[in-house]
Image (cartoon, rainbow, N blue to C red; front, side, top):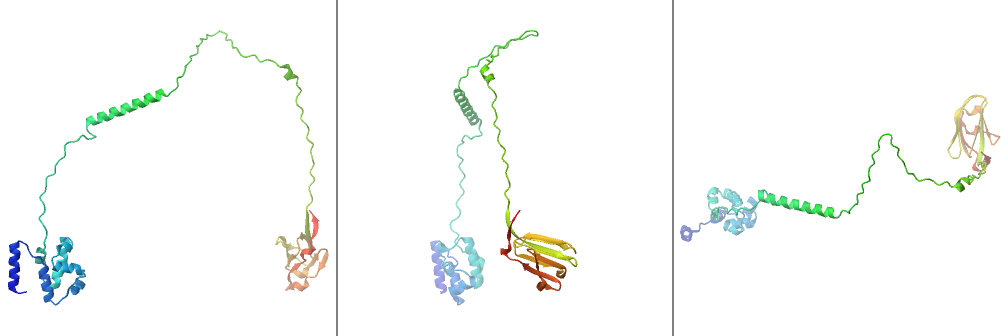
Length: 284
């Protein structure tokens, strides 16, 4: 743009009374620097629409002046222009309107004024009186009888009129009711029959630790069987037998000697004895 055109534009702006914004200087400086709007947008990290509005002084599409001032300073530093001069060229709109003195509303009665308090208490008292009158009107009438009181002095006799009970000889003549004797029935306990088998252990030549469990896993014996003693147990066959020193023990099963030598390992024997079919009914 030539100097004549610039002077002409400034003359027209002075005649119309409109001050030019900073957009034209920004655009001319950008074009002189060989930058496009896209490059300016990328460097300043501003939207293209905001760069366009700044260069065209499009106030309608610009944010408030406080934000625009910051954008202008950043744009001016990029183009090496005087930032404060450009900020002063912003269109700040019309001057602030003159302050209008507030108009005070006419005085109104408030709840704190004494006439209002008096009226309020009168209404409350009237309501209480009406409520009391309604409550008394709903109460039923009751006749109060006052019994005469007699004055008794020491030495006076007092007669008490008590009802005389009539004697009823027919009631006294009735014999007392007899209570029938209830015969006592003796209950004979029913014998319990359980199917069991029998194991007998005899320590012949030495002491031996013995353990016997029945088919249900119940521990029937668990002790040190001294030499010369015998232990007899009954339970559900088959039995799990453990002998700590097997050569010293003789085993009897259902009254018969059981040879357990085949189960001995280093004088210790562990074996299962009998079967479920060996259990016989026993009365307990």
